[in-house]
Length: 144
Image 1 (tube, rainbow, N blue to C red):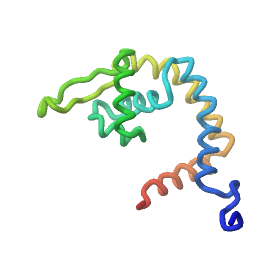
Image 2: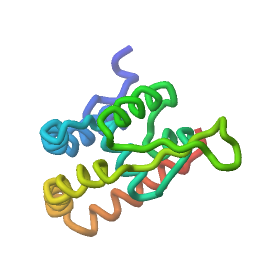
Image 3: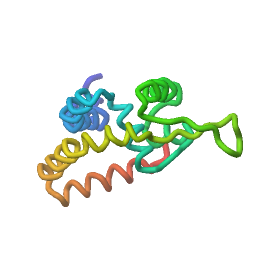
């Protein structure tokens, strides 16, 4: 039975997990020092990049499940890193935006995060780094 499975060294899911850990390990330490989790950081990054959004949009952009996002938003709001505002068109809906304090968290950690990204880019080389991003982008557009 084991002969039918690819070796773990040639398994795409395992290779992706290993690569993620290689990239996120050093970043995780920076985020811990900043007092935010990886998931909270992703939400802050999405809001910083995209502007105010509805929770369903944030969940999609930050690669989070909506029930998890609900807890994350509550925690970010408690920390003062986001603001919630009712949608002007439909008061049952809400828009979430990054707060000044949330922007400060990004700004305070930007140098360390960019340095780690540069180390990865240098290790792969610029062409292979761009190719990897292109391949992963293509992969994410595949039908399930």
